[in-house]
Image (cartoon, rainbow over all chains, first blue to last red; front, side, top):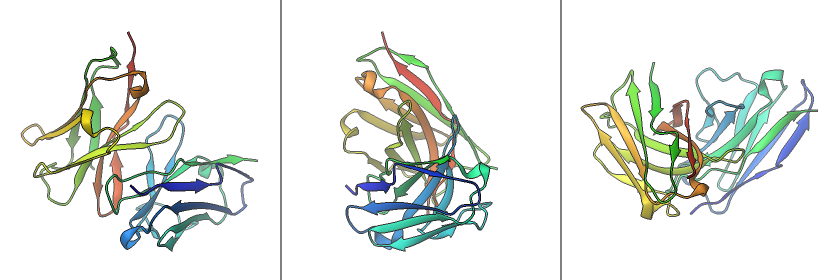
Length: 108
Length: 118
């Protein structure tokens, strides 16, 4: 089973700042089958990035994903108030398709 | 527009079976392009992948739940089902059904809270 470790657990930033979220895998994620999701309170998660670096439909270009192998990053270039949420990474390269424990992005 | 809707009892007694249905509209679960997954989230905690099923009935499960879980498809009703046996309070969670394909998990239901309590 691939274990995903996200850091930091909580990230406190102000609107307009840059956010960098990390997801580290316990073993290599084949074909970079790594996704990022955004979840707001009381809502289902929303796909943000898939295949490590491809933005999902409707996701603004201030969101970008990078990385390969075991180290992946989600970057939000200029935070807007709507971006503050919890972000999860998930690998879908091998079963079980595990999630990271999440990073809470909060307003400073 | 694809939509998924979970339904089932909101309260289940310990040691009993949790049974949920996910009705899919706007697309066919018989499409060979996707898996259909169940994911859960205990209150205030992170996401846990339960398992997924392919249109031909092939399944994958989280090893931590495999002995207690059944996932099935009913193509005639365009829905999928989840059964989780011998539940305890640790199974209290919001349960989501979702579509999983080459674009990761791109469509999610709104989720349904199931509480395990006597």
